[in-house]
Length: 88
Image 1 (cartoon, one colour):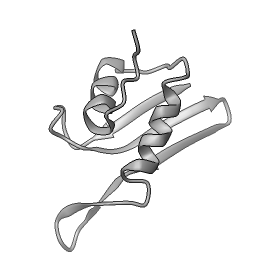
Image 2 (cartoon, one colour):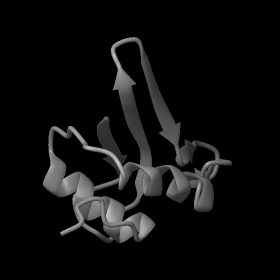
Image 3 (cartoon, helix red, strand yellow):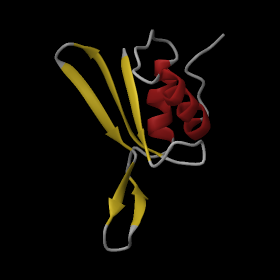
Image 4 (cartoon, helix red, strand yellow):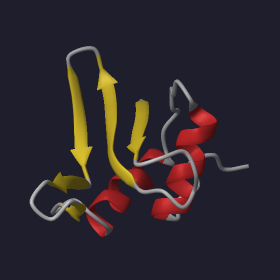
């Protein structure tokens, strides 16, 4: 399963604003957890924010993952969702 996350920055103090998952050649999903609200100049959570997104990330712990920048994506999953994608 391919996994990638998008964030507001490069540290664990930043937020995950969305992530993508793909398990076959023809189907992929991008889950948006936050979006920019121009009128108030800040991020706002979506319906997938929090527990719904964390449930999806938890499922990934049972899969073999393909990631482009895996160290960063795993760091952010652990910091933001409290889920370790790499289990020793």
